[in-house]
Image (cartoon, rainbow, N blue to C red; front, side, top):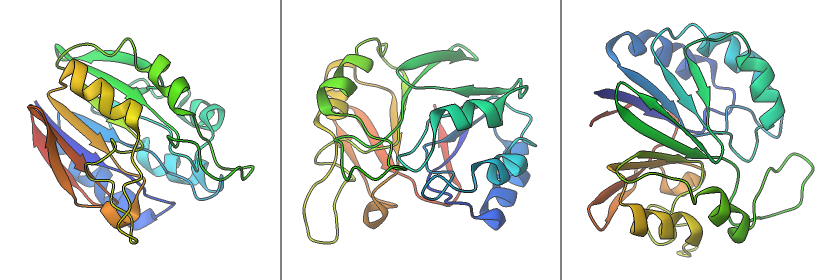
Length: 199
């Protein structure tokens, strides 16, 4: 299976159009959140992305309203919105969790989860899935400019326990392009560009 993956578009129309064009060569397209910016521009971004015809698995970022994403994806038969849920695509399990973990600033637009909430929502992640989260796991691909690790301990824990075949994330802009391993699981912080993976 060939996966095209990205995160953190933040309303970027040019990159969205590139993703649509390149999706013709993919078996699955994965988007790891932050399609909008501070809750604005979600519909416009999805008006472009919904031209993708191959299966799609998306999670919500902390800038994205889950209800807004559900509305924007209504009628898009190829698309799945994952939030503590999973789907099987071409015999490969995908599991996703959106939002910011751990919970950060309480802005009205900032969608966030406490670690305990995230841990409960990740409990049903199957073994050897492709795990898609907006936030990175603690300690891998989560380095801020100040040198602090700001990833999620709940996400790291589920990777340690369930050993996904691949973990894809975004959120921390300074860590875009960073990667690492947790056990046998490769972890990639994507950012707003096209990345290809084979599983």
